[in-house]
Length: 114
Image 1 (cartoon, rainbow, N blue to C red):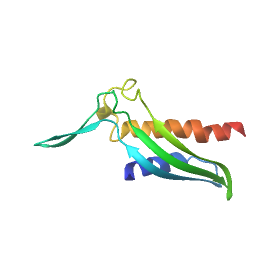
Image 2: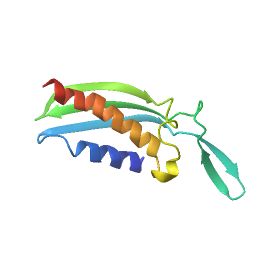
Image 3: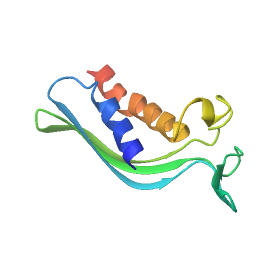
Image 4: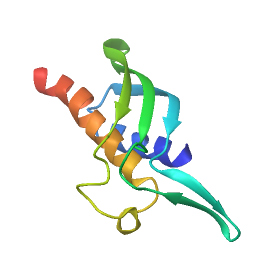
């Protein structure tokens, strides 16, 4: 959760002065599944029914006034196809990419409409 929280904070850092984004992450199902072994647990991503899923609630405020709010359930069924291995992109890459896309569509759209 710390990594995803930090990523959301980085996204929100680019908001115009006076705007604040509040996000409550209600549920996270990471990409892949855990395979338990003698040498430790390994997260396996096969691109099938193991897509990342995030359920969140958000409020975007400007100078104390709510300008947008909602609840979204994010899922990326094609998460593994466009990029290949997570190893080249870092930990929680698929989830962070999904949150970045949500931010651009949801919060960025709010700014484009003004």
